[in-house]
Image 1 (cartoon, rainbow, N blue to C red):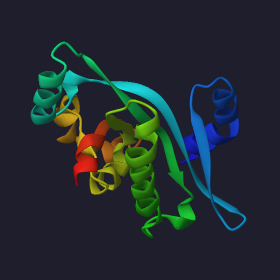
Image 2 (image 1 turned 45 degrees about the vertical axis):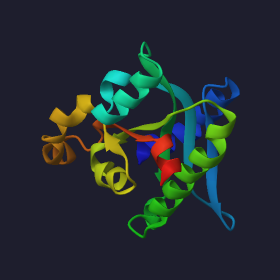
Image 3 (image 1 turned 90 degrees about the horizontal axis):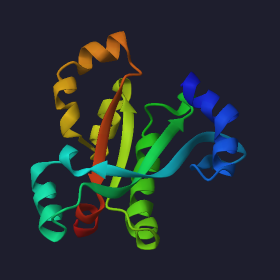
Image 4 (image 1 turned 120 degrees about the vertical axis):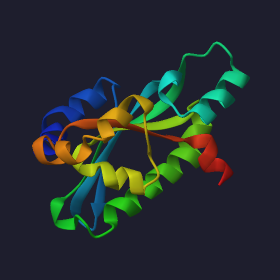
Length: 164
């Protein structure tokens, strides 16, 4: 959590001023309980599941990278951890991206580089591990113990969210 707090204090304002990302504070009453940072990105088609890859290639055969929105940072204050608040906020964020932001900006995927220690959180909020990380998944338990801040790329397909 320290690196996330450091980002919020040291980097978020300057990066937002340069239009590199946008950070929103999550406030309850008068207390900051977390924050989320969003930025534009893209996802290499080679890294997604085969079914989604076929659908995209059918529509746009030569596409190699697909417009995406990245959750660059997501943090909830430790005193609210493991109470379901993070899940509720993430689900609301995903809903907002799928039903509002994606109508204003052409994006197909929500992507995130999640920490090993937070892998189950992202999996439980329906993120899918990128293909290039599946080998690493076998090492996940080891990574959680040895390097809980090792990152894993994950994604959600906005089109599938709109269908459900």
